[in-house]
Picture 1 (cartoon, rainbow, N blue to C red):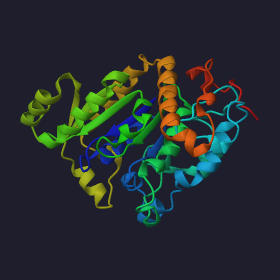
Picture 2 (tube, rainbow, N blue to C red):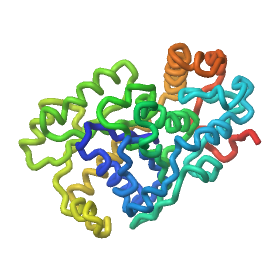
Picture 3 (cartoon, rainbow, N blue to C red):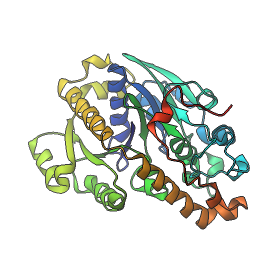
Length: 331
């Protein structure tokens, strides 16, 4: 399942996404974690030191390799150079699976060992000084969107993405790529403002959205969140001495995380598992094509010099059965 964590800057979404990843690993799930935020902090939240986090390969820097691999033998794509962030897969495309080795993971992912297992970690790469004034950060996360478009996953597979802050995720169609979106909100008026934006934007696309209250100090905080977000409130997470120690660089074993917070993380996993029953691969593929055609018309055709609408394979539907080992990949 594909899971997104969103929220305003400072809401704690990176911390909560890292706790959820640790929880999944402890429950023996297969996890690919992706840091798609402009502030690259997920690696540190998962226990990497400063040098290890800085050494993570940048997906954006590997975009030519990613495009060349995913293109495969798809006859509708004349060259990797004509692929953009929204290019959908078709017959002959190579697909990514959570439980496999492939050149994209070799170039872009690193194994991170946690207390109770290990995960793959990928990162878009930081916004560098050379990008200032000449690049849009959304071009950095284009590699993530392209990979999500070509990724098939099963019930026990998790792709967890720490997204950009605020409503920036709506600058592309990536917000429709997930089975469940967890919006992290503090119990304040500012804390729920991003929720309203997300709810409005996502309404027409069937995006499954649940609110996770963070830094909740009591029933009054939960009552406030309920009054603002209603039934979208999933659970509240309180202050954590374990997190405070982790953020000081001295993490205790994950099993010592407070019991209430462990139960809250299980509620997130339960909600994610419930969303599995609602998967609609035809809608997922249709939305993928919708945003590709919008991007092609607005800038993609001009940039590539190609008619990118011709890349759409009308007979192709991305589906879970394509994640099975017996599903053929082009050589």
